[in-house]
Amino acid sequence: MSEDRAKVIPADRASARTDEGLTSRMAAVEILYRVDQESGYADVLLGARLPDFAPADRRLITRLVLGTLAWQGRVDYELAHLTGRKLAGIQPEALAIMRMGLFQLRHLDRIPQHAVVDTAVSLAKRIPKAREASGFVNAVMRRATRETVPMPVRERNEKTYLAIAYSHPRWMVERFVDWFGVADAERLMTANNDAAPNVIRLNLARGSRDEIIEKLSADGFEIGAPGRAPETIVLSGAPHFESRAYREGLFHAQSEASQMVARMLAPRVGATVVDCAAAPGGKASHLAEMVGEYGRVLAVDLNFNGLRNARDLARRLRHRNVELVCADLAAATPLAPSSVEYVLLDAPCTGLGTLREHPEIKWRLKPADPARMAAIQSRMLDNAASLVRSHGAIVYSVCSIAPEEGESVVDGFLARHAEFAIDSDVAGREEFRDVIDARGFMKTRPDLGGPDGFFAARMIRR
Image (cartoon, rainbow, N blue to C red; front, top):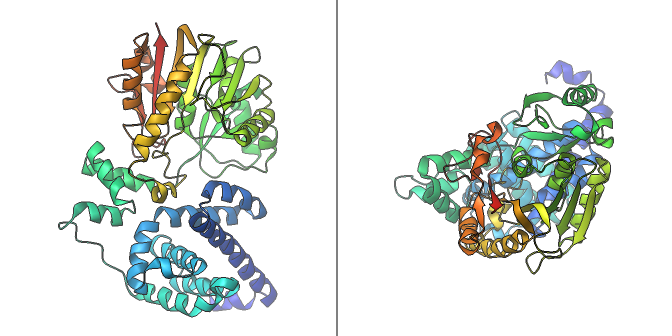
């Protein structure tokens, strides 16, 4: 802003704008603190806070939170050098402020460096527990504007370099390199640090694709590229959850890979479907639309609050054919064996394919977690498959790219259950043609076309 322009803005208005900017950034710091200190989940905390802000502030808060978490490994590497201290000994709110400030300095070049420093100090002064550290925050952030900490030398230890440069835990880098090779691992980690596309699923039970898109456009949605399926839309901007279209249940925000899982099951109209790990209800509501008003979806989950969310979603989308069952499928099935034609098991997993939306996962997962989850997934798949009648189908899926949670679980299942076989006909469907491998497994990755990292297999009971 020029000096002349600054003079014509009344002082009270300029102060109000400054206060609004600090308020939104304070919300981001609070979320970062709770993710770090209280093991909160960024998407849940964002969902609770964002309705209090204007759309522009929502976009900023979301970018600050998810970006800081995604780059936390590299940011912490720099902060350790800039502070000369172990980060665990720094006051937690002050650490959150500096992490967010350094993320802005390194990755958001539209914000002037002096403004980032001033904002960080102002935040420290406004947060009581961080107030005493405001001078320290000022010194560190000013030093960060003058110095850039060099990365480790790649030739000395390539995986250490990759871990710092791409902000992933070293053990995760080692796994990615083992699974995909160095070049693909770099490309994958680059994609993991990008913002995920804003994808919605149109509720075609409420109208045609063109009719719903017309209403969304009237509500200010920025319609971007079409997805693989008629109900899939990639937006150019963020969805408006305060819109009439949202209240009327015309759409649901759901990633494209997640939508593809229900499409893979492809239940016939009028069928009964069991969704075996249904919370929070995105796939169950998708299946409810696919089977139609005379079909039936039994949504099973151990998480009672998650089932309540599934119920609320079904009500907003006006699906009356979703029934809820609270049960632990890992222990036993609550339904009669061989009783249904279609079963979906989108199993609990590490979430390694969704690091764009859930970057805090990177810093919480342990090397043993994929194998630990695979043991749970195998028990759930055995129980879920017992519900499938002759010539029926089951889709097993996970939002993970770990082979232990994907093909290894399915291979173990097929070795125990000779009556099931992979449905190779899925590869012939146009929407899946480029994501089905030679064995009939669906595999997606964020660096290969944009969808989250999912694994899925459709199996038929012979």
